Image (cartoon, rainbow, N blue to C red; front, side, top):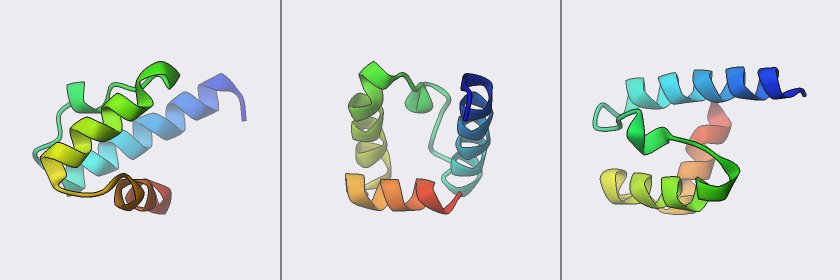
Length: 61
């Protein structure tokens, strides 16, 4: 998978997450390798889910 494909897949996942969880904003889903844990932490707080639950939700998409 090249960078363009990975970015496209992430954009698709972001859209599906925002559809499923209306409280999520683009800022909550800002993604870079260096801040993946920070992003997951923000989602944990907003959604009341564990990191493992969030990973499973994202894997479904």
